[in-house]
Structures are given as C-alpha cells and as structure tokens.
Image (cartoon, rainbow, N blue to C red; front, side, top):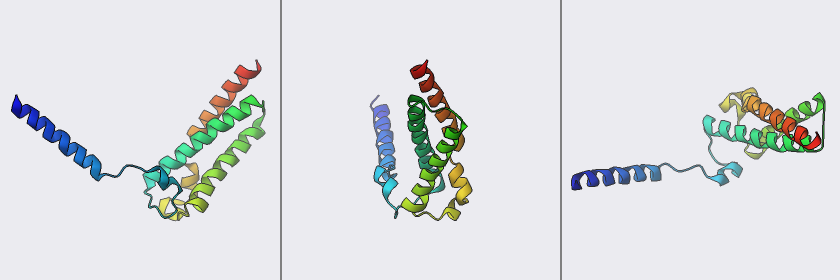
Length: 129
C-alpha cells in the first residue's frame, strides 16, 4: 500500500511541477503591445471580444427597442471596428503573421452574429411583448 501512495504522490508532484513550468495566460497580456502572441491565443482573444460585444449590443438593441436590418449592419461594423482597433492599434500586431486582415476580422464573426441575434430577439420579445 505504501508503494502505491508514494507512486501516486510522486506523479502528483511531477504534474504540479509541469504545470508550474507552463506559464498561465495572464490578463495583463491583453493590454501589453510588447507581448508575443501565437495564432491560437490571438484568435481566442478576438473571438471572446466579439462575444462580449455581441451580448452588450444584443442587450442594448433589445432594450431600446431597435428594429430593422440597419442595426445588424451597425453591430457588424462596431464589432469589426473594435476587433480591428484591438489588434492593429492597441497590440500593434503585424497582421500578415496571422493570415492577414481577413483572417483576423473573421475570427469569431459567425458565432458572435448568432449570439447577438439570439440576445437581441430574446430581450426585445421579453421587454416589449
């Protein structure tokens, strides 16, 4: 029995040591223009920025109540503008290293559009009917 416990505790120690070697994603990296980014990390950040913008706009559009296709276009422009500002101006990233503007601007676009419409329609229906 003692051998099992020691093997188990050794494997837990090794796993903890490996986790300590891998640095976790730090929140301050989001605002550091000197930080290095890999394609997956930047894609995840851009994706989640779009999701937050989608929820905020959906709540606002539904509560105000905005109707019409013009507000979908406004959301798309606003969302893309924020993402462009973030990677181009705030982080000063060379977009060619990550597949160009098209790849970066497309990151999370369809998921955020779906979430935006879901929140907008739900809030509008609950608040105004």
